[in-house]
Each structure stands twice: as C-alpha cells, then as structure tokens.
Amino acid sequence: AQSVTQPDIHITVSEGASLELRCNYSYGATPYLFWYVQSPGQGLQLLLKYFSGDTLVQGIKGFEAEFKRSQSSFNLRKPSVHWSDAAEYFCAVGNGNSGNTPLVFGKGTRLSVIA
Amino acid sequence: NAGVTQTPKFRVLKTGQSMTLLCAQDMNHEYMYWYRQDPGMGLRLIHYSVGEGTTAKGEVPDGYNVSRLKKQNFLLGLESAAPSQTSVYFCASRTGGKVTEAFFGQGTRLTVV
Image 1 (cartoon, each protein chain N blue to C red):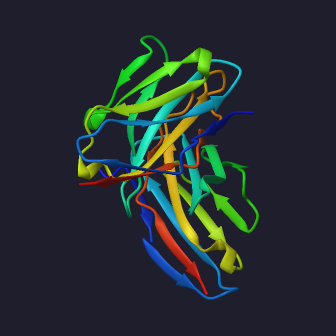
Image 2 (tube, helix red, strand yellow):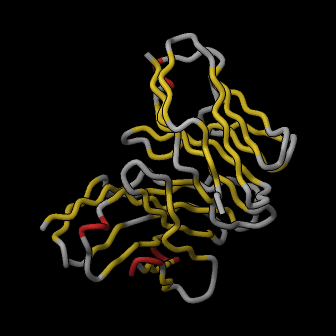
C-alpha cells in the first residue's frame, strides 16, 4: 500500500531564509507525487506535481521540488521564504498504475515564518 | 469558474442529529472524494466515487454514508452525529482514468455538541 511520511510536524523559519520540507513515500511502482498548500481556513491548493521526466519540478509561488527515487523522497524547497508562505503543506502520492486509486496524503507540515 | 463548492461552510449539530453535506463540481470530473481533517491527523479519506452511481469506502467510513446520483454532485450524510465527528470536511474532485491532481473545496467546519 502507498504511504507518505512528512517527518516534520512544525517548522519555523525566518523571513528571507531558505526552506526545505521533507516528504518520503512508500510505493513499489512509479509514483505520481504532489505538494499542496493550505492557508488558514482555506482548502488545499496545488503547488506542483511530478509525473515523469525531469526530476526537478517548478511550481507556483517560487516553490520547487526534487524527486529522488533512490531515497524515495520528494522534498519541497524555496530559496527565500516570505511571510505569506506561512501555511500547512501536504505531500501526496498517486498510483501510476491505477488511475482510480485515491491520492494518499501525508499528515502535513505546518510552516511558521518569523520576522 | 466555481470549481468545487461545498455547502454549508459551517454547521453546529447536536448529538444524534442528522445532516447532509453537499459537494458540487463544475469541471466534469469523474472522481470525487470526501476527506476529514483533524489536528495532527492530516487528511483521511472517508468515501469516494469513481463515477456516477458508484461509491467506495475509504479509510474512515464508519458513521457516514454517501451518494453520487449526479456526476457533478457528491453528498456526505451523517445519520446520527457524534462528537467524534467534529472536524473539517473537504470535498475534492479530479479527472478520471489517469492520475491527476485533485481540486479541493473550501471545507465545511462541523461541530457536534
């Protein structure tokens, strides 16, 4: 069965500092990977996705993520964090061999940004 | 373009009452999902549907029922609400037949007292 682990429950960074949020997945075949962001009181918004090809994918709001098959990871990065990036971030994995299988989400990482 | 719309946005129920949450999407998506979100638990799948007239159980289906009579609507019912069902409920939809991103509604905050 697919599973997603986000090891960090809560991360605090200073505005302007770089950010890396970790995501590890467990899945036997080719995973389809996603990062979502949830601002307070809002639904989830897609930041970026990886299906195949270049392992470094660019997303919205200046975010990028790198797929590393050998480490079963799909970490999210941003070179310079803005106060508006404070939110909860979710990693998700889909089954590339079965399109009707629901996405599996990690438990999320809450990001706080301090001045 | 409305996307995924959830009704209502907030609701307070007394224990034992029933209610139905409505999810409507205007993107002609095949697949629809109901999740609940609780602190520290992430998103947990309650029920889902891969097409009109079909439903399936997710990770935490007990105490909930669903129906998908029309392609654009996915209803989540609570027959006899319990305080443990206090949560934020999210509906999502996506294109069928292949793995694609899911689009989420704004959520329904339900409190059972």
